[in-house]
Length: 301
Image (tube, rainbow, N blue to C red; front, side, top):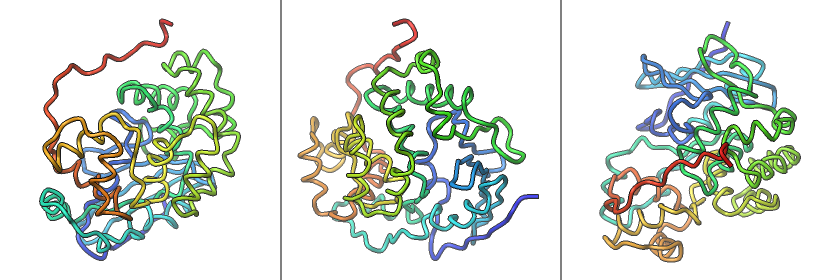
């Protein structure tokens, strides 16, 4: 029998929008949305594998959990859903941001409390297309993860640190993961305990802890801490698209770089990640001028 918990938000709440950042593309074996609108997550907690089913009932979110990690998942449920986030600390400074803020009052910055769970897929996303990274995540979980506890069909829990370390080189190659990214993941799992401690740190300390691992830079650290720590100021730098989108949305100009993006977001100091989320939700993006990057097949190398 599953364990249960019910959480009531203090104001407007959008479950699907808030948790969407945890989904690593279509077909993510650790994240599903079923036809009834329920959100399913398969996680590896400090107590073991667990599966969480979430349903938005309007006035509250109902959760069920299975597996050795069920109690941990339910204990940390409010933080996962955004209970520790403080949207009232945010003041829109641009008309577009104000409009997006008004249209999405239920957006919350979630906090999983699990660092490796967000770090490893973020490493897979380094310097490749989203499709390449999502494919690698799917293949590695299906081949080296374990079935999710409970009744969830076709869901997998990501490998534990030892299982990540035992993945043979040919399976990394088959998943399209180059040696640089796989080596970074191997270094990260060897320091798993130290990295997981970053979930309880403030942004500067947590970012420094992650970046102490060779191969993890500001981009990867920010992408991880946005999810594991729910940090409202963890703005992503070094991204190919984000500065251009933010620059175009706020000024109508193309070619914005990181420095110009940070200058535009300076009025949101302390809340720059939230501002970026709202800007992305506005849907105002520069028209595409070039074709998408093709997906490279590392298996042919």
